[in-house]
Image (cartoon, rainbow, N blue to C red; front, side, top):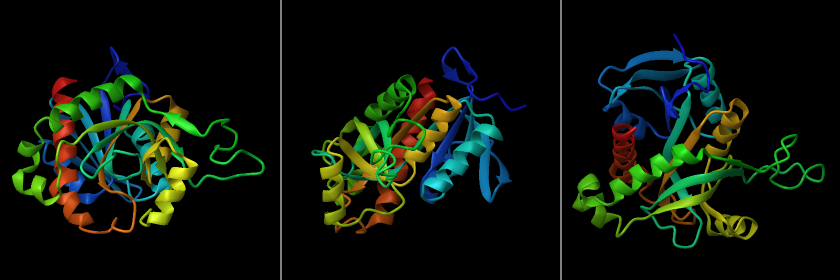
Amino acid sequence: MALPPGASDGGRPRRTGVVAAMHPELAAVLERLPDEQRQRVAGRDFWVGHWHAHEVVAVLSGVGKVAAATTATLLIERFGVDALLFTGTAGGLGDGVRVGDLVLAGEFLQHDMDASPLFPRFEVPLYGRARFATDAALSARLGAAARQVLARASDTLGAHAVAEFALHAPAVHRGLVVSGDRFVATSAESAALRQALPEALAVEMEGAAVAQVCHDYGLPFAALRTVSDRADDSAHVDFMRFIDQVASRYSAAVLEAFFAEL
């Protein structure tokens, strides 16, 4: 029987939705679920299983805000998750946010939302806000797991990957992440985002939509992104290899640490 949205046990989720942004990351997650069962809904495969005895529903979101919002809504309405975690990659924007670092979202904003002059730029109409916060307690647990993993990054990734991508002293950053329905991959675009949103640490394509859905349902949400590039003219270089060698391994290791301590 599905749990009602928002149900939890002493502040700890009973059933957690895990959303991955790329196929290799979902595969890395599924390797940790010994008893996963597939259910296909709305063209998506949802994998229901356990991770360290915690109920987990894992799914690939698809790319973009609409796909992500649909996925989040299905996790809540159809599968009864009471917390949601998003893992994937992002382009770095903030000063000191380097390739191989992890960004823990404190807030999300849609950088392509503009209903002016009826509403201020970035504000979501009828919400009276532009930013949607993640859950502080869930994010703190996810951040602690991320720091554990980065402390042994060489063991997680292997020395070859660390050397290939120059991943020296990776760090966890926490703050504003911005989302939009385009892949930011030029220096001009990233410079424009930094000028308009100087607090933004990273840019991606799904998180703000999931944050808004979770806000509507009152559901705890946390998101952690691996920085794959600097959202500039080199953003496409070795992207899929980075996913395979770095981001997917970070995602699986962080979630392993998260569920082990939950």
